[in-house]
Image (tube, rainbow, N blue to C red):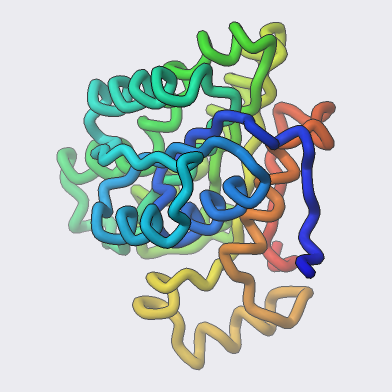
Length: 252
């Protein structure tokens, strides 16, 4: 028997997740499906996305191949989802890539591409779902932030710039959309042990630092974030908006 929380308010809700085919996004996708939601996810990673579709094997799940840097493609994908499942009620702006780069290597073109990858699509995805949410009498938008800029992490200035801006985006949208009964919050993960993070960045030295700095002495995994996202999307969090919630095991 599962000991995970069940949120009746999420049953049959129409949910859109960006970057929902792998990593944290995959866990969020799986979690909403378990709640009985109708879930559509947008992703550029076709291989992992198709694998997830085949694994879950449900009519309540839909995949749209989408390069989120292409805003017209993003808007068209969201229109297709709304036509298939009905008006969108929950948006999880999850997609991002924390590619490392030095200050000296950054060009104007690279900066623009990193902002498009990690920030710009969050605003335009939110813009694209507002009319649906307004028709439903409200909705929930959850933006995914990062503690990287909060702890002063170096080695990726474009990424930390984009992720810090998400907090400002969240607060601005929450103020503008609140009168429409649309809640906007930011979930801020710490260092989450996705396959990508383990393969590329986890070392004995970095793991020791993690355990030294976190209050909770265990690694965090995508499911830890997915559980909190479910809560924030549910009616249990109906009084929560305009906030950033850190889920980092107590690093900060």
